[in-house]
Length: 406
Ligand code: PMP
Image 1 (spheres, rainbow, N blue to C red):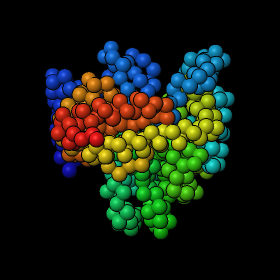
Image 2: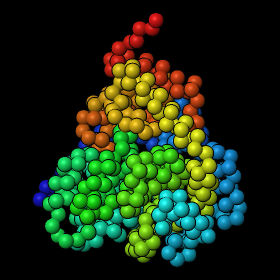
Image 3: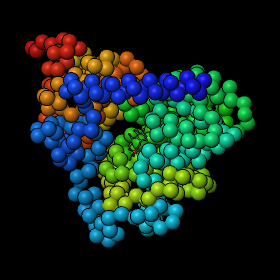
Image 4: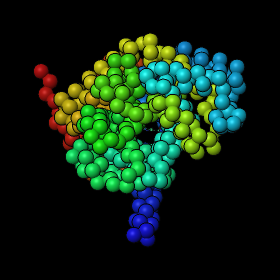
């Protein structure tokens, strides 16, 4: 079985290598595209201004004057980097301030910050899922959750995306007597769908499991106060461990977990991704703190980003595109065929829209899509332009019919 797995992984690696070379040869290679500007609602790519419809800068804070000022001041006071891990010489008073603020904001006893969101999942999951324990994951979970489970000494089981019957089946099959941690994305980052939190919480209560929600795309955006998917569903108290990143709504880099003091104390002394890696640099910490101020004080940004996304979702659906069933700032345009997605992506960019092509394994095979995502700072004119371009390219590809205008 191990040999078979190795052969399969080698085959997959070869396929990926061949595919990326093929895309480069066909001038359809979409990765590592350099922006020559700040990541705002308009960016400069290949010497042209294009509308950014593919970033995670949901609240548009990367260029907010207060956020930029806070980062600059932090460099003046603390210098450019911490040159050490939180554990030994890399803890600043502002790391502690950020943790205290996040705990209060998320209504948990304690929080712990890591240098990236990816490392947060690696560190927290591998610490929490010990030898006798089992992690139970949605098949659509983010790569960092999958890798966190791979690092953990415990077992990992999966259920079909948002399939509550299968989740219950998996939970009822666990008999080894250890703890069970369900780990899900709150917002699934490619399709923009929400976890079925009410169903998961029901199952968790019935089977006595614990729940960890990766709310990288939910915090700052969902819920009345921006506390994410748990707040959106009114189920925050049932989320035992909540994880977030600073690389999206917080306009920075880093991540955090929040939970009870006991759980955070445990992770703090077990998570190798925390203990053996340098801490968030001062500018990133100050950025996250300033962004948190704005998340707490400017609810209008949340309303605006959701309104912008709803408008795009409805208009694209009206044109005849398949936009799935999301309700977040992420709006996928599901096309299916991978090569078509790359060609569609290239034409969008030529016409002036930056979006992201997404293929397997980030989504299920034959479900390739163009991921668009919106910001509070997109203007109506920018969104109108994106819609016009989608309509033109959609007709060109035969994905939609030309609309008759009155
Ligand atoms: N979880 C989810 C659901 C994500 O989408 C991402 C980033 N794409 C991460 C974790 C990792 O976060 P970061 O980029 O801060 O490392």
